Image (cartoon, rainbow, N blue to C red; front, side, top):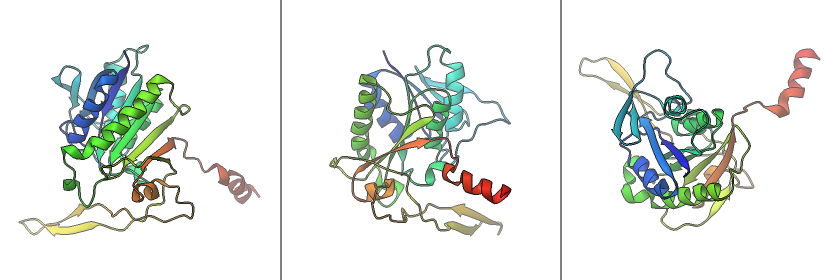
Length: 259
């Protein structure tokens, strides 16, 4: 039986996590290790300054006390799985909201998949785009994402993982009911603003609350990025690699520094 490790960055009580478990349960044995609380935008962070503890919720379902998504994958590989019996697939999600363009670098959802491929296990990050706000997502909103992740995982198990080592699939599902198809995409060019809101507490002390940015992006003529695919109603699948070297600039930089 195939072994699937599931995690997320929205916390162990997330509707998206439950939807993901339900979708993949027919394909293998599920182990869930998820953060105790929401860890959105925590990036690829590991907890090094305090101890971490698995808390069993039910059989093969754990929350990691104050851990990050990367902690969940890292510790699971070392504490829950034998060295010669790692999971066949790690799936992170279903995230509440998109993870596209440069947001991938912020994303706890994507970072869990990064940690999995660093550990030598194929991985998928999957996110459900919402309409206007996170509150627009209900339990029924994940039905298309459930179909997508089931079909992709089954295709992997029936054949093989389509990417080389240290690469993972980043999937974003549009907020639509009918399946229009898949587009294989590049990571888009997000256009960011500043959504920091200044407030005062009852004692008059200032504090800031960071908001979320609208899904604006720089269009390219071929419209082959993840943000364009979602805007057109398609499921976006982007191959992501961990090597962030700008290979095309090495020769120019060498000439600049040594020329």
